[in-house]
Length: 373
Image 1: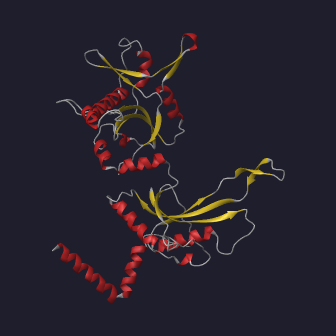
Image 2: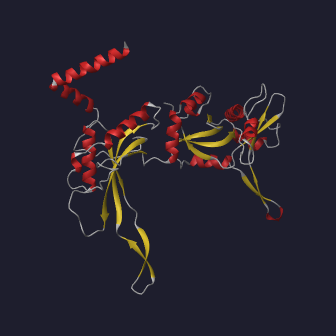
Image 3: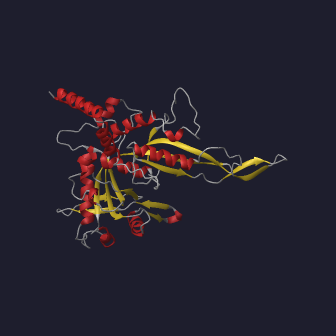
């Protein structure tokens, strides 16, 4: 019944488009009007676009070349292509890549090596299209990205028929046949990784209901001060069976990732504690007072659990630098000038008056805060 209804709906749609061309044109206009295509505007690429897109085309000119060729400029071509794509309902943007001035080594008339500026540098103007959170074909966004790529590869835009030259080949029959999926070039690898974490169903499940989850952090950056890893083994000198045996838990034994998660949660509670360690509880108690009443968070990843502190809008936040110095390992110069690096530990007091010493990372580092979507 479901297949019959789908076929029936499709047939009705065909009849509608054939019988009522005016209504069909209006419907098409409605579909594409969601994407603005104003000739008076410039649609520049921004970090908010993507993070995955289609690299449609790249146009180049030679800066410093006295022999100017006929045709429109790369900027004009890119702008016209963006408008044409947008009129087809595909969000497109311009991205300009300015070549840096470089110094090259050449020979002078006497055969001596001399260094000169390379004035013949190449600038590029690129057109990117689409806004996709993923290119994984198992996801809706990934399938949409692949579909858009296929459509773009087969397009023959009117704006590329005059004044534009491209190398036609059997593998590239059309001007846009070389299009490919690519990340937003304005995003760093950390930003791309953060975007991936924001969408991964496994990470959402691991962290969604966690108390003091990093999802609760309102900043853009946070400082990783501790990392607890699961089991790892080098199988180069071991058989696969021996390696698997080391990951087999005994009855009632927690696996290593669960143990890492418990350590991370314990440290977060200690850092958030409103009551500092009693001065008589530990010799280093006076110095440990600073490690309490902190804004601490936990994040469970694929192979570890991390503890972070603070929320910062920029990576250059002075408070982030202060905290990094506070948690970092210290170098001590001993007798004879011998240097020793001491990692910091936080003693966690239990009800039976015993301690668990939880280590901090020797070199705290910033990470982007994943956004739950």
